[in-house]
Image 1 (cartoon, rainbow, N blue to C red):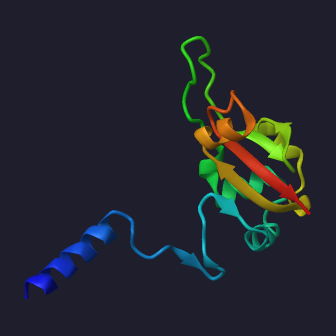
Image 2 (spheres, one colour):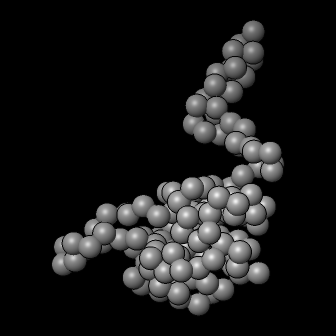
Length: 130
């Protein structure tokens, strides 16, 4: 009896902490920090630019992470990289066609700083082209 109660309590704890089953779509398991080629292909019918695809499918990639220092009151947003080369800020996504994109990934500020150096307080959006 005690074992059953323990197992049920453990199951409730794991589920409440987000350790439950991953959310799925018709495409299978979905990683919230990555837009795959299949997801982009589906959304391309409604969107023409990379910015529009991200805004519809993963708007959290585009949000500001707040100010990064006391000197600059500018909000910190992600830096865009295309095929591992710095491409610009979020506005640069508005000039990139969705047809060119194979994969989009968001990495947080700590990982972006480790990978690309300083000045990535808002993280980075990594775009892989076809």
